[in-house]
Length: 313
Image: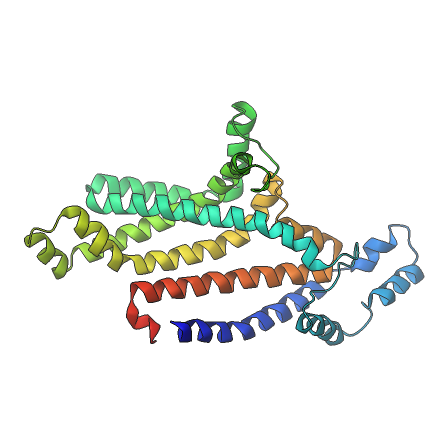
């Protein structure tokens, strides 16, 4: 297992570099730069050029990237061009918000999706058809539309939960949970239906295998057959779907954080892009990439626990 983890980490290092290069090049294509923002609306061209030179934005793009990469090698993601604060000090507090949202959505979608998928694999065709319809509807409705409906109904009309804002876990666990319920539901709905369908198909395939029939013929309890034997074999594709859901939720969190006013990494990315704040944009990309690498590593470890053959693969 240790060799598997080490190999995955070594393979991930080039991915981190490639992503940083791509993001750096793409953000350079955005019209304007941070000098325009800092100089002000009525600034002269000479003043803007002076600010650009002061920030080092007049240097060739490869030189700018190497300067940023050299800072990373020395343990720094640079300073914000807008307020001069270290990027890590700006993004670290926001990491809790994004992780709470994305992990919450992944857990909710996985648990409810697995339960629905398992139940539909054991029940009649009517339940399966209902799940098919619900899945199509769930995947067709965008998460931002669900978020707006939840705010209109649950927050505005009923007044049950706050529409915007975030309370940290350390401040108040109860209010932390209340501030995340609606965003998590909005972000989890699509993934929930996808995991339910994946679980159902995997369970239906496993339940048709000979060793399941033998277990039932030998008098093994139905609960043991389903949860101890069948689900363990069907768990591999479900784990894959959950990992993909986490990665997809990272992208969806950018919009959800904007709608619910959550001060997460996605909100920082939008603000930094508007201000052409290159170090912050790069920092968000690095954080997101590290999260993706981390969830892929966790997925590989779970694979190794479910299937020992993977550990030596």
